[in-house]
Image 1: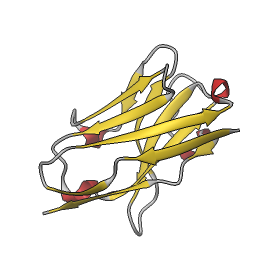
Image 2: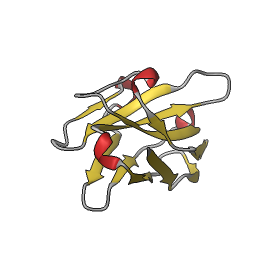
Image 3: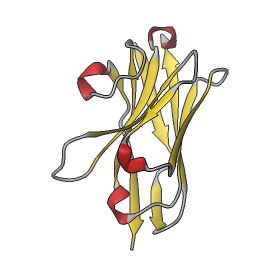
Image 4: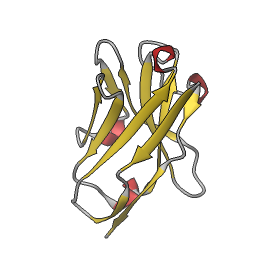
Amino acid sequence: QVQLVESGGGLVQTGDSLRLTCAASGRTFSARTMGWFRQSPGKEREFVAVIRWNSGHSRYADFTKGRFTISRDMAKETVALQMDSLQPEDSALYYCAASRREPAPMLSDEYDWWGQGTQVTVSS
């Protein structure tokens, strides 16, 4: 099993930045890729970004438009999501997830372990 704990969410204003962090523990060698998803009330969970542990190769959803950056620290077994120029439509519960699959899974069903989520709220 892989345990995931997110942190860094909060209430910010339009145009502000936030940095989310996901700490992995347990059988982390089982995970090949780490992803971020988000879900707003009444909407389906959507893909945000994914990064491959060993190569650092990443992929993003179109809506991030260069505003978000995913990174990983292999020594600390953490994955971060830097979010800049936040907009009210970015408000959501953000989840960290781990997958056995490579190179860049983008569907929720492709992920094997999930964190509890961290809330991001962007006020206008």
